[in-house]
Length: 182
Image (cartoon, rainbow, N blue to C red; front, side, top):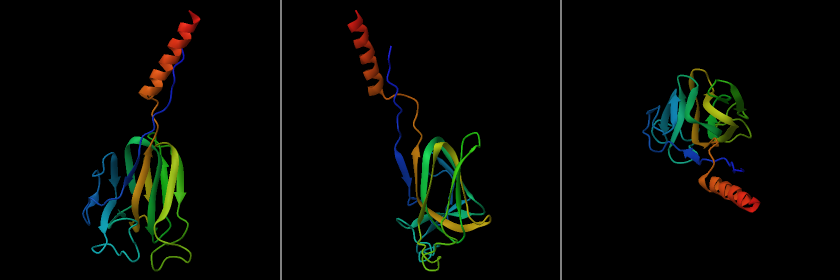
């Protein structure tokens, strides 16, 4: 019997932090994500939007007290975000078993809006793509307060469960083959 086995691809999700308040600690307010060492800054309040302009809206997340860690409730296949920073940053991806999956690093020493390195611009996009990412660690200055991130986008990993239409097509093909043999 022949059955089709296609993977189901989940949607790509973007988190822009606009529903949160200035100076709010970011923990589990975003469905499917758990943050540590993260705080929300808002343009015109606690965020210097001239040096750290948000990519969209008014809110960004920033490292507070150490590297930001993001735990995904379900594994993801890729993670991307836009960063403005005062020191080089790295974005490291890990599996559920804590195996290192890949790293993305910033292109400059600093990419601030006014006083960044020559040739840099704020909101540099960094992306890590690897199967089964369960944890992301974003490190700038080990003490924190060294970068902002905006428009965090992730794509869930494909599951091994066939889509109903694919399963039914495989079943129909198997029935047709069996019928022709009779």
